[in-house]
Image (tube, rainbow, N blue to C red; front, top):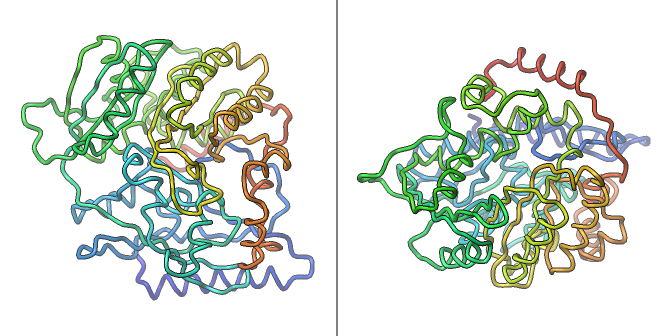
Length: 475
């Protein structure tokens, strides 16, 4: 663990790299090497000068009196959680994949099942240390450089380099008491999900719909006493994947409760990457059996599944998108998804919209409650016309007054993109903080050219297996 002084010295080294690039008359724009990614996009534009920030990966301080953490941007969320739990504290929002980094969660506008209370992950941040392209180090908070503080959310590193984040923490408990409530229609599911959002006893809530009717609302509260509830884990190779447990309860149609250790709850979707790991069995022509899930467990976590996705260049073969939709338009959005895509399950995660000028953020919407509609999977309908369907749903999200998350494939033209976001505001912000020449614009960074990707299965699998052998301890 670095001290604050050691952190400052490391940041000085990064600044020196950035200034060297800026002084080169042939210099390219700056991009950063983070060491990992939870984006599905393939990096197509290599016309960058890269600065390595992989060693910005320490928790600098856990403050138990004022309940905050000082964290470098490359700290993975499982490392952050492990550090805070030592002091019986947890972040207010923590995304469900342990390999997501703190900086990625801020820049990428991450959310989770406590977002109906707290908003996105970045909404739990109180201050940022940011290195500008000029080499200056500034502090951004609600009280100073607030335009940049709010502008960072959803900016994907196009405004400045986050080097330190101050995050609020909240007292933890030993377990999440998890309640499964099956539903028999999408309307019933949405109505019940809304009621759980207004229930003051609930700490976390979400829903999964499994077909045109069946779903389950999942709500949890923190507790130190499991009582008579069964204690179930989701992190061991012998455990069921979480979504399969939820699907079982939905099929049985009976209310069910269990106690889940808090770390297992927060990263409950890691094994199997929600349900996307099921497609590995199809690719390998293997049956979907519990024993095989157990045997293949070393690769069936989100870190390794993302590596495999990028190594094989398979991302376009799957519809992987999250759309923030106002609650009152969510039912028709789900119906549209069923009609056009026919992909299930679908994740529903309620989100508190922001009242602050986070103009690049997906939750910058005028509504009372947002539902993140996560549609991830494959179908015959989708495979007939993947690019057109991605573009169609981008437009449909606009039609219902929503926005999509930009971690995934974004096919917007520049004109379409800037009809959604405030280009004049963004350009002024980039000019003010010296980003306009040094960093790419966000459209360029998130845009995917509308052409079909070339899949390279054998080469990709070979590359992935070599990485697995070289890094046998990857979790």
